[in-house]
Image 1 (tube, rainbow, N blue to C red):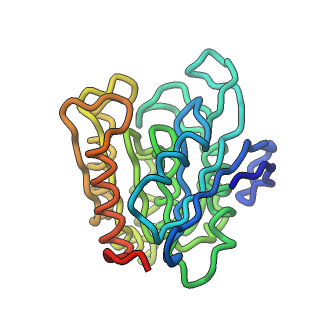
Image 2: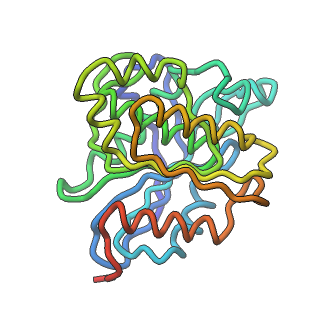
Image 3: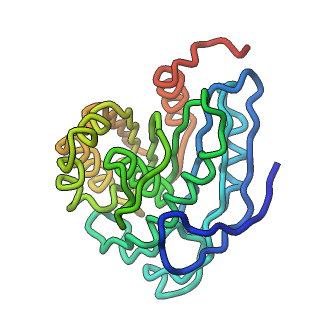
Length: 255
């Protein structure tokens, strides 16, 4: 199913964002977990929903929103679907904290209406992966970048071919409280990256995983793929399925 809509930004960002269609893949078995999955720059929620629907994960509900269309600096200001503005696809780029807060809040809003007994996660590809990892750091810190409280209890996050935004400020955010340190150490994170990626270079994915580990995120798995470019392959998605099944404690039953 899919539905359109706009979202007022709970994180307090100033400018309004108009989101495209959100595509929902219903679980084929007993609903045990819900994951918001975020597409890459210039893409939309439909393409990933079609792939996710084919995965052997009958207990997961997938929510695939479409990012707002906005001017993007890396495209010389040309409008594209983007979760935030970016001048360079790497962890060294200037951070559009306002845009990332808005998208992290949109993810949290989508998850906030799920039943209380359902495990919640966020994942994505490329810029979507960056937004997913940013959401995980907001969860650990307990706050968005602008200081407003982060409202959702995330169980895990997945980032494919992405990078970690705001890596430079992560240490101060996580060391701000014992609770943040505890959350960082407990949330499972899966990062996957192709060594042949010519869009978001492999070194950015590797450095992002290292930065997370160095700042208290001790449950990080980084998987590399020798000949993989800036796309996904069945081998990678099989790894995602195996990791989600283990970390969400889904088992092998579809009932």
